[in-house]
Image (cartoon, rainbow, N blue to C red; front, top):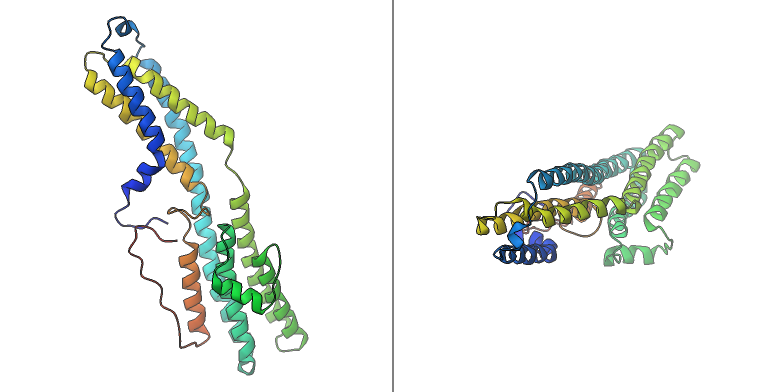
Length: 293
């Protein structure tokens, strides 16, 4: 996630460098051709590129709004995961007697691993060493590891209820919180697996290039330098807006605009360890970059 710091302009330049080079070559080429007497006769009313530009603006506004909505939903879901993780452990600590401290610690460790495993699986990364170590120790093997970890939570709650350690009401409360975590996991998976309509992206992309192609023919030929600059600047602004929407529409792709799942997992880990009374609590790594993961 981008932070409120100086953002690296080179990140955005690198994202659009191929389109930027193409626009620059086209603008200079049209400018040189405008110096030829026969080519100067080719012109369009300014209303034509203005009409296309208006259509592009409307489509880009819709595209950007939809992309931001997906990004913000992802961030909201992970905010709920933070809250429900704290609630789950708080309930478990209150309901389970101190004589079963080992089960409380085991439950807490599993919840910490779950948050890291969920973020890494959404980014389709290899699991981190700490997650792999936990999975190997407890012999957890499944296609969906985060879901398997929630199953282990459910088994522990069921066992405690069957042994009479917790009442039925307490079991229901724990299961309700667990269901909310499962619901949040499902929402993340839906966002990850739902692809933004490709046809809409192609339409916007095509209209931008159509606009860029006809724009110089609607500008005044007497100001060659202004014509070249405007032919580069205006389409580039549209391309930047489109690219911003593209990189925001997928918030789990391990990019600087991602939902900061690793950072949130670290926050959850620190909070949970404090709640169970651990003394050796890791500090959150200091981040000097313009984004956090």
